[in-house]
Image (cartoon, rainbow, N blue to C red; front, side):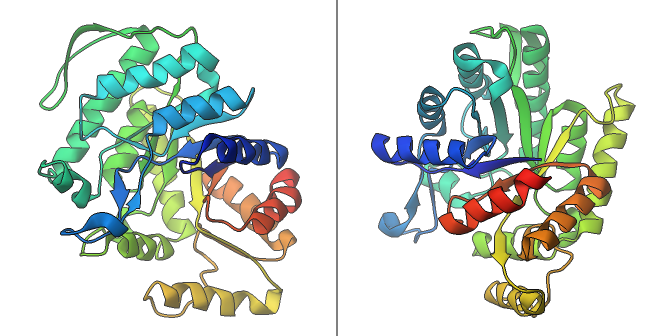
Length: 331
């Protein structure tokens, strides 16, 4: 099983040290989120958490490592024509090899970012329509080097992919709605499963909290159904049922004794304003001794063909190192 770490911007010396650390503990790659900012008040965002330019950071990471895979999780194609994002990934592929590049595309979900740019955030259905057209364009460009598309949101007319890598990047999507599952089945190479439609939609004034609640309310059974849908869609369009590799972002890794697992789960769920629960069936939480985590991840490998886990940059260093050494390397 592969493990990827998320990464946020830092001065070059700090970035060099972080990349070396990720390599040394045996991770497969680094993914960078794409946000102008998160949080903060609409009238004064001086306290918002500021984002970084993901492509510039990825280029720096790629230059500091000879083998780490790099990608975004995921680039917001709601702000500009997706071809302009796609060519950035193509350029990375020319520089370091497409087998190392995950071209992460997303529809955008943070209304504050749209508003800060003076742009209305389209409704969910419209954003999904645009993402599907962007994914179709990406698939054609990566597979054929040339694409034409007369979409409702995305237009490309005899557009050549430039630069043209010898090996194209892999198209990476993230999400859990039924619509995302269908798009991934038709076009994606990789999918990070984030919640399910059954766990509810992201809404309300605090989208960060809503996302936590949605994830913590998702079950392994739910992801199993999601993966089944992706495979069925892939098969209906003539792709291999295993064309899309599956990953999940692990929000919580807590090493504890068996007797403490329920208490730890209740602590996490309560902190997210949910009713106390053990979270034993939540795919985004790993609690217990290493053997318990290995058993849990092996079960998920079998149940929904889990290929990779994503780990947050905020995970404590000692926990991350122990997880890699005592869990991931044994899978």
